[in-house]
Length: 489
Image (cartoon, rainbow, N blue to C red; front, side):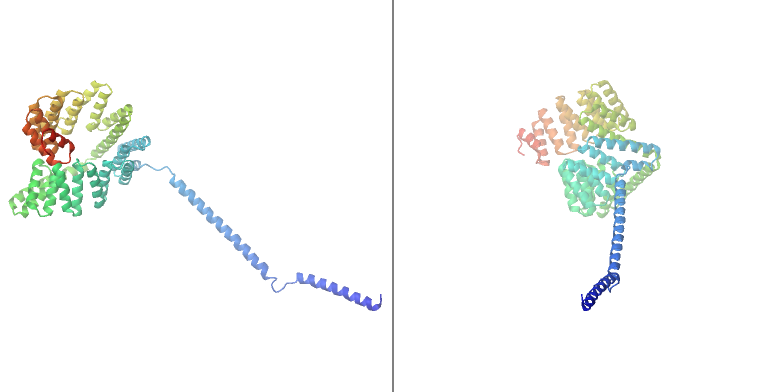
């Protein structure tokens, strides 16, 4: 190799070494972007790590919150009546816990029984738990949309909350489903009057009065509505009759005094107003006495619990569970001996289960302790009739008549008893005639038609049948009676 070639090769070798050194140096030396790219990556990695930590913390908080809510929702909560027991006296608190357990047990055993939910609703309502009561009654309507007691009870609850429109709707539904009731049209008429719908109220009350001419509350309400409509003469007629039927009916006096004043009968109005003031003072004194009497609260609670036991007993009887029903009735009698429904039902059950001696002892005690209580006498007489103790039933009905000689109930019941047994046809007609005179309703005239026909008095029978159909033209039974007597409806 020549010198020139050696120099050229050395030069290429040096250049290659220089290129390698430069390449290595370039890899190691910072360029214009060398410091920027690694720093951005670091920021991104830091931000991502912070975001993950925040997200994890947020998820942890949400999980803990959800767990807390689940624990709160599933916590053992006090039952509505047990909440009241916390602030009650020991005696009342024990009764509240007892009836709470009864309600819970009944609903657990009969979750689809409309009467079980109604019992729960009425029990809650008696102790002021209106929201729970309404929930129960709405459940009743889910189970049976024709269950009249639920509509009536929801109407009362709506009225108490001030929702007159809803109250009127519930009362009207109850009345349309039970047109023979005197309670539902009375409540409906009263709500319509409060709403200022006086014309509608009068229409409802007149229709109800046609079926129940002796209903004092209906007649008095109609009188009040007529006063507001300035129809004073008719108002006086209705209000005077209401007071004559029930002299202690305080609410009839004030509107009567107003109507008499408007008619210029000042002295008569002043006398009525004085009577109103006396009755009002009496009512206020009675109310104050009830509030002052601490023992009254315990008595009232015991009666309310007894009512719940009687309702539960009826439910158990409906499925043939007589032992539980008897146990519940026994407890009801223990709690409230004055609550005669429990005792009468116990007498009925004892007779049905073959223990007639005990049944009669219970009935004797109830009648003796409530000799002046009309409803008790009437129910005791009905039981005696069912037991075919007709002489005893007759005696009890006569006591009822003597107790309320101006009311139709006793006369109707005794006339019906004679009609059933075929005894004393003349007296049966006479009793039916007295009933119709005291309560000129379709049912009274229908009974009179039957009694007169059995007594051989065709003229009276036909006239009574014609009147029954006139009062209730859509009643198929009355139409049948009229046709059998040759009367064209």
